[in-house]
Figure (cartoon, rainbow, N blue to C red):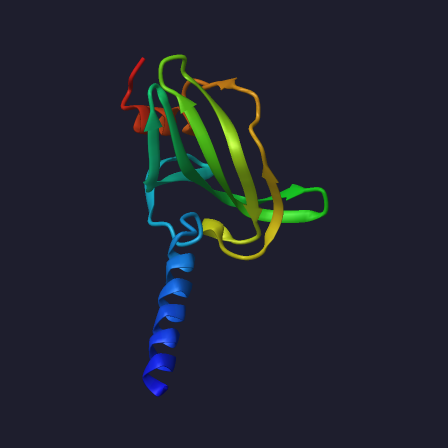
Length: 138
């Protein structure tokens, strides 16, 4: 009977660890892509997925100064983005503002659902992400 409990406990622990590891944006290995005087932008290369000319990736904007949304203050923005490599545009699939740098602290705003497509502004951190995930493809 005790060996059956040990196996049950081992399976439960393994399942719990698997659940924790599947939450990529929280436990991500962020790769620095670019930065300026307002923020640094990172991507989680483990989350890059391609389907034809579309690329999905989790992106982290680590802000240098506190931003405000309503009554909440935040220092970082995590987002799952979809990039159109041919038409040089992107849209948000999920967005989360957190109170601390690098996605730490409490979540002060969260939104899911596809936004509309927006063009990639030239000379921005968004363009740096697009170039990285699309490989400069036009």
